[in-house]
Every structure is written in C-alpha cells, then in structure tokens.
Image 1 (cartoon, chains in turn red, blue):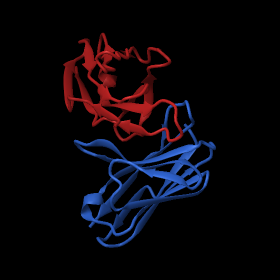
Image 2 (cartoon, rainbow over the protein chains, first blue to last red):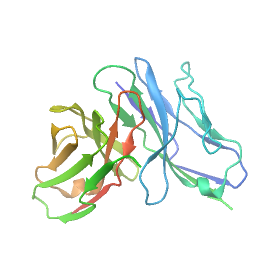
Image 3 (cartoon, chains in turn green, yellow):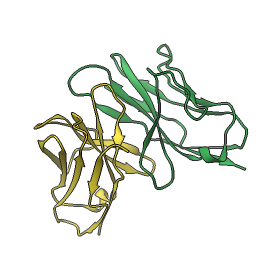
Length: 111
Length: 111
C-alpha cells in the first residue's frame, strides 16, 4: 500500500534559520516523490520532484531509499517561505498512476 | 497555469441533497484526480481516473461517485450530502510522467 507520513503539523522557525520538513513513505515498488507548496488561498503547485534533482527557491530534497525518506531542506528560511507543504508519492509505472499526499506541514517563518 | 477549471467555486447545500462538482481540463491529460482538503488530514484522494470511463477509488470514496465520459471532464457527485463532506475539494490532472496540476478548489458547505 502507498503511504506518506509527515510527522510535523507545524514547524515554526526564525528568518535565516535552517529548515527541514520531514517526509517518510511506504511503497513496495519504485516510487516517485514530490513536494508541493500551497501559499495562502492559492492552489497547490509543484515545488520539486526527486527525479529532476533541481533546487527550487533554495529548497532541496534527496530521496533516501534505505530510510524511505524524502525530507525537504533549506539552509536559510525566508518569510515568504511561510506556507503549507505537502509531500506526495506516485507509484512509478503501471496504468493507474495513483498519487497520494501526506497530511502536510505548515511552515511559519517568523521575522 | 495549466488549463484546469473547477465549478462551482463555492457552494452551500442542504444535508441529504445530491451535489455534483465539475472539473474541466483543456490539456488532454490522461489522469484526473479528486481530493478533499481538511485541517489535520491534508489532501485525501477520493477517486481518480486513468482514462475515459476508467476510474478507481481512493482513500475516502464512501459517499462519493465519479464519472468520466470524455477526456476533458471529471465529475464528482455526492449522492446525499452530509455535514462531514463539508470541505475544500481539489481536482488535479497529470500525464504519465509529469507532476500533477491543480485546480483552484471548490469550497463546499453542507448545512
């Protein structure tokens, strides 16, 4: 079964501090992992995906298959990073392409 | 933004009435998804579609049905609305190997 776990509902940090949003997954096959961000009153948008290995807005995430984790990191938080962050998993390959999300972590960056 | 439109954007309905939400896309994407977003639960998959007339249940499908008679439209029906179905509903679309693109959401209130 597919499962995504985000253990923190809220993460509050000060501007300039490092950020790490945790994501663990459960999937028997080869998954594809994503991070999505939702700013206040806006639609969800992709932040990054593990296969592209890009750094977006200073955020990075590395897929650790041994620990089944895909934590999101940023070395220096900015106030504009305040948003809801969702980790998502899609079973790679197959016809159904089921995409599930974690419960989300609200990041609050204090001035 | 991807060509994806949800209607209506807001709806208030009475308990026991049927409600249909529409997701319309102009991108010819094969996969379409319906999620509900609730505080503390994140995004939960209700139903998804992997082609015309091909649909499957997600995590929270009880009380919901879907139909996809053509590529561009994916309808979500609440057969008999209950207060527990008060939520924000999001539609998403994707191709086989792309990220999912989200609609703006429908805020549904069942009174």
